[in-house]
Amino acid sequence: MQRRKAEIMRKPEWLKLKIQGDKNTTDVESMVEGLKLHTVCHEANCPNKMECFSRRTATFMILGRNCTRNCTFCNVTRHTPDPIDLQEPENLAKAVQILQLKHAVVTSVTRDDLKDEGANQFAEVVRQVRKYNPETTIELLIPDMSGREELLDIIFETKPDVLNHNVETIPAFYPKVRPAADFMRSIKVLDYAKKNGLKTKSGIMVGFGETEEQVVEVFEALRKVDCDMVTVGQYLQPTKFHIAVKEYVHPKQFDRYRDIAFKMGFKRVNSGPLVRSSYHADAL
Image (cartoon, rainbow, N blue to C red; front, side, top):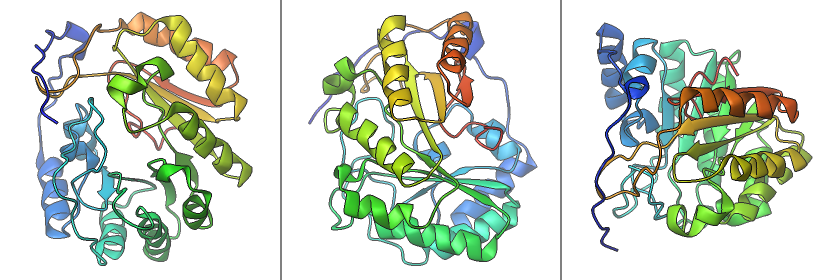
């Protein structure tokens, strides 16, 4: 599907970054390349990449670089999916060891083309990270696995320390932002994770034109399934071919979302213009 071009709105001062790369950045990039790994930091063009790499941390992305979904906000490519790399779980575990990560965050592209949608690769990653790094806590940021409980069971049985699944936006915007996803399916994934005894986390982006009331309704849906943690960040349009930003939300509004979320019972909240689901995840 060919996308229409949309002009990119000029960023306000609070979104202009001045962080430059350093030796740590170079070291992390070289290590990732040497172990044939991918990071969501690079593939999704995260605005915090330089900061995180300079702190010798990264969010690993498994199952290749190409996604089978067609979300209009995401910079991850949608070419032919990559073959599964059976060495990836062990190589990722080695990377965690090299970086001496106390908290490792692992996500993936969506792989609707696979019979198990990548569930077994997630599970093997957890096993290998624990083998090489027994003291490291593990956070998995998973796709919805089409809502199939038998696939979620494969992942949940490894007992990750945090199970993260992002709702991304308000339900009304799913047809134009996440056309292949379903809001209630995502809520059910988080509910099933909680019923399996896992700590749960989700995230939402703002700036698509949603109202505060609609964001609070998302918070309410997450709290109904006892979601423990939530992140709120500004959507940034990666290219002219992605869905346009409608609003750069002021930092004071992010503070307000944080206060509202805490009052609603979330145990941990990270809300700010540059917040991403895995940004400072160790602190959460």
